[in-house]
Image 1 (cartoon, rainbow, N blue to C red):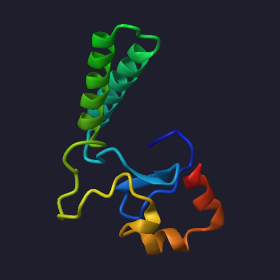
Image 2: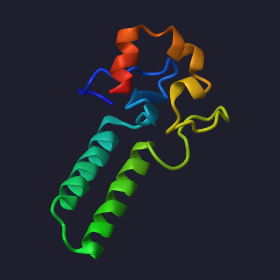
Image 3: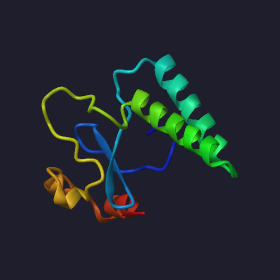
Image 4: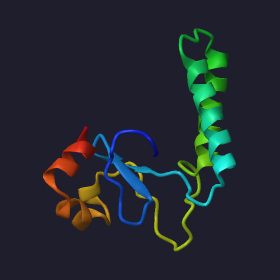
Length: 114
């Protein structure tokens, strides 16, 4: 996540914490052009969802969002290759990142909870 709120990011760079949950970061191996193209597709699909009354069009836009998130490595198979499981969606205190979370400053934890 770049250019956005200063979310706490796990030391291994796999996740950031927002609303009290671990969210997978973008695959750092993507080239700048690949990352930019996927983000552009993601934003177009999200804009396409706004005010879409047609159910089939909304489903197509949701599928496009999912495809872009997969291209970014934020969904689907994990992008790291050490066999560690995907802990996305978990609260950090209930994950393998519990000690990291406990050691963060109160201010950093607050940023991750909001």
